[in-house]
Image (cartoon, rainbow, N blue to C red; front, side):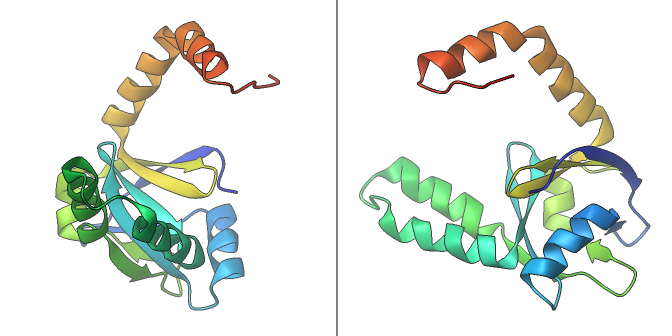
Length: 151
């Protein structure tokens, strides 16, 4: 599981060094260090290669007669790009994903369970502030939808 967050700097080529704990997860699931990156929620989302294959397969189960689901599939799958971690644990974030997520030089890698997110630092901090302001309401929504967190 990807957890926590770290601040990083993109180099001039758009490469990012993964933190050691993220590297270990990636390599434990794929010796070649393959990661799938895509666009979602205004950030770049990274999946281990096996998790991506599982996720991609799940799209075969959606109702393709529903236009909104087709639009989402098009957005999510067509935005995806396989990248390989190099010997220095760097990944190259493709230009179309850097543009989508408005990534500048300063970024945040946030572990979010079975995936990680790459955010522009300022946008990440704004997102966290929004969640903090609405925390009680979010907890209520989770509870009302049948989720009970044992915090």
